[in-house]
Image (cartoon, rainbow, N blue to C red; front, side, top):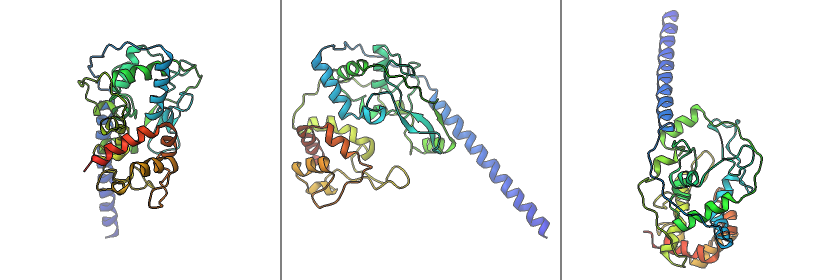
Length: 292
């Protein structure tokens, strides 16, 4: 009797292992297919500026779009996931021309920032282009590229990228937005210029960056990973509905809400508080305050 039970247990365990291996093989080939898809895009022709005002504008855009948050203060790149994590080995690129850095033409910059694609026309990995750079106006994108191209070379080489089994599973379920090119409308026609103003229209242009965490409807939801707090609802159904524009600016500057709560550090308020002007924060507030 015992022998028969053990035999059946062995059969069940073996069947489960076969199913798991088959499922992982499916995950592997599905994610590899997506990673290796070659996109056929028409790159826009963009004349880059080369004046001091455009450099200053590009620096500000790099700040409010969070480029240094991922690529480091010197833009030489840093780890998203290092070898110790079970998800992937993935580093933000060295954007300079130093050893280990990129060697981009102007068209390569447009391909990466506007379409989320590498020089081979395959998707970049974990680059938040859909929320950060693809929506930029032509004027702002040109200034950003000019600023980034002007950075001094830094020698820094990063390990080769690798996605681990857990990372493939999270990518398959949509919990890990690994392939940004999939989320970009490659036929979109970018606007030439969005005038800065303290109004909801300009706030919408700025707030698209927030949608990376708070979602396309800005309703928030569960944290993106274990131990991460619930992501706040930024619309009229959330606590922000009771705030004034001054409350919003103060919260971003100090990390403290009008009702005395402390904003969790998973929300990069310290960084945003340094790079945004008061008028920009007020514009974002006006946009969010209109969302039902």
